[in-house]
Length: 284
Length: 254
Ligand SMILES: Nc1ncnc2c1ncn2[C@@H]1O[C@H](COP(=O)(O)OP(=O)(O)OP(=O)(O)O)[C@@H](O)[C@H]1O
Ligand SMILES: [Mg+2]
Image 1: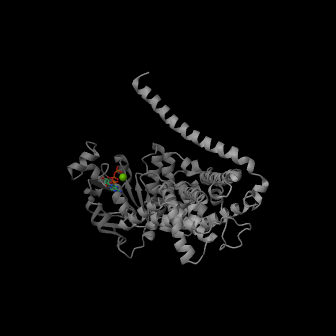
Image 2: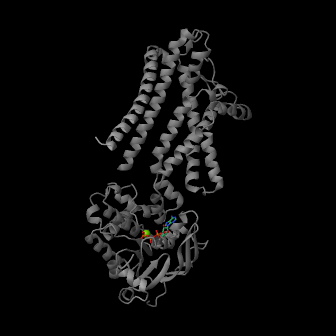
Image 3: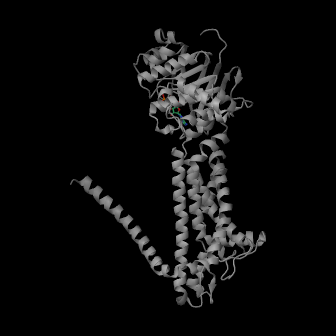
């Protein structure tokens, strides 16, 4: 073997080790959560409220709460994010103002989620008088997700070749026609994937819902969007740090973690399937 | 030049990309029902000039036209001009084939649909006529529903010609429409151009001297943004006035 091919083989092995290390961590985490969580996850666990000071029963209200809050988040973050991205990428002139806005958006996605939580209290809970509620928490998570969906949508739009736009315009399409018929169809899969990944991150957040609506324990399901709610990540946090008998409820905590993980997994897989489907449709 | 009222009148036209000037005081009249060829070495500004005629360069930030281009006596850069309408009248085939990732049929129908034509029978008729016009019909007629990206490079080029023909523009700008074609398809496109010039005004950029000589009525020779010589094709190719023109067309440089 000469020096060049030795270097190549070495290079590949270094990269392979990096990959293997990451995979190993993932496997260990999954193994831990699945083996300790699986025994707790029964039909009762999924469909009933916590009982006996949260030492028994299930996590149904938390599942419902997380679902509802994530819906609000989606309603706020997805259309707004896509709309802003379309404006930024297709219409906004490339000047100082736009660059400044874009930079701010990038920075916002790095703001710690607890800061969004505080902001949500000020804006939604107090100023808008939504109180601590599903809608306050959903909007807070929506704001937190917005920079992510905007950035992902913009990347998806950037990936559409300029020649699609030019070709449409040269055939007498208006700008909006060219965007609607010749840009968006090819950007939507990427936009949706970005949005769903953003939402799945939001669904797992604790800090932003901590002060804006998540409740320690509610035996009943929320009856309006202005109710407080239980949420999976917050429930997990309580079960592992705040409960009066942490060791006793360990299995419940692991079960909750597993359910949360599975839900997020499901959402991400549906994003992948959706993207694949849309790609196939495009190829026809 | 024959004494017709010019279709396109370019007068003292400059064009800048940022600070660099790529077209310098171009003045030329383009006759209707004529084929006008633009020749010149790579990077001399041929595509830029062509893209100024349907204001495609509007899309490039910090680019700037200066001077006048008139089509049918109207200043196309005037604020009152609707650029969408202008582009319907001035069709374009791009230098790089740019089929949309849609079916062959939908590619050709695209311009019709965005211009508000809904009658499917009319659309089908025009798609067929346009594909016949660009010599793609025989190869494409059984696969109209197939994605246009599956076509070969040359077929894509003819598809783009068909797409431009479908909206029946008055002026047709073609940027090297035969660069990826074999001699047979090239001959067909050239036939088509000669046929089309009965109705349309055609401006074609080409690197192929024989092609310019065969199909064009007038030829413009550009170099580094200067219009070196412009005149009847027969004159340019037999008795060029400028030494540079002669050197270029005989292949001594460029
Ligand atoms: N979008 C752009 N931004 C900046 N400069 C550009 C842009 N497009 C073209 N140019 C420059 O303008 C000059 C003319 O380019 P143009 O594409 O008109 O050349 P051309 O004559 O068509 O060349 P070719 O025969 O290779 O297609 C070149 O120097 C090119 O680098
Ligand atoms: Mg060119």
